[in-house]
Length: 277
Image 1: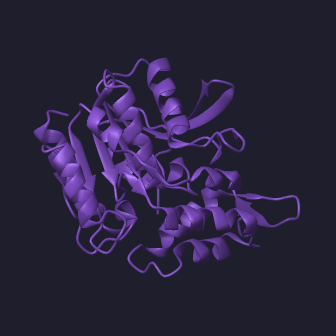
Image 2: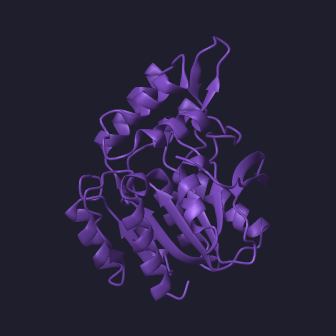
C-alpha cells in the first residue's frame, strides 16, 4: 500500500474526548466521512482516499478508543457513542449532504449517524455489515477481552497476524495497517493502538429502528465470501427500506475495500452518481 500525498492530521472534541481524523483536502467538494473497522484506524482508508480525493473531501475518523483518538473507558463504546462523535464532527465542521460510509463496526456507526442526523446525511454506505450482532459473535468479542490483545516484536509479525488466512488482500495492505495501527508498549513489544475494553461493549444488538429512520439513499455491500450479512438480514433490509441498493461483491470477504478495490470504487461511484453526489 503506497501513498503519493499525505493527509492532514486534525482533532475535534466530542464531550470530554479529543478525537483524531485525517483530512484529505478538497474542502469545497462533497464531504465523505469514512469510518474504519474494529481494531483498525483511519489509515485503513488511505488508498481509497488517494483514489477519491479529487472527487470528494475525504475525512477518515479514528473512532474513540482506537488509533490516535482518546480512550473513553469501559461502558462508553456503544454504537450510539461512536455515532455521537461522528455527529459532533459534522456539526463542528458544519458539514451538510455528507456521504457516510463505514466498514464492519464502522458501518453500524455510519448507519446510526445517518439515522440521528438526517439533516446532515446525504448518503449511507455499509461495507459487509448488517443491523444485527448475534449473541454468538458478541460472546466471541467478550472472550477476547480476558486474553488481551496480542503483542509482537516487529511490524512484520503484526502484519502476518492481521492477514491470517486472508489471501484475497495483498500483504502490503497489512504491512501498512500494522505500521499505523500499532504502538510500542512499555515492555518493548508492539501492541494495537486501541482500548481492548471496546470489545466489552460489543453486545448483542439489533439496529432495525435506525434503518427505519434513515432518509438518505442507502447502499449495502456484502462480500460474497462473507456470512455476516445473510439472506435473512438482506430480506429484512428490503422490507424496511424497499429502495435500498444491495450489491454483493464477488470474490470478496469482509474487507472489500482491500480485496476488490476496483469493484468497490465502481460500485460506490455508480451509486453516488445516480443520486447526484
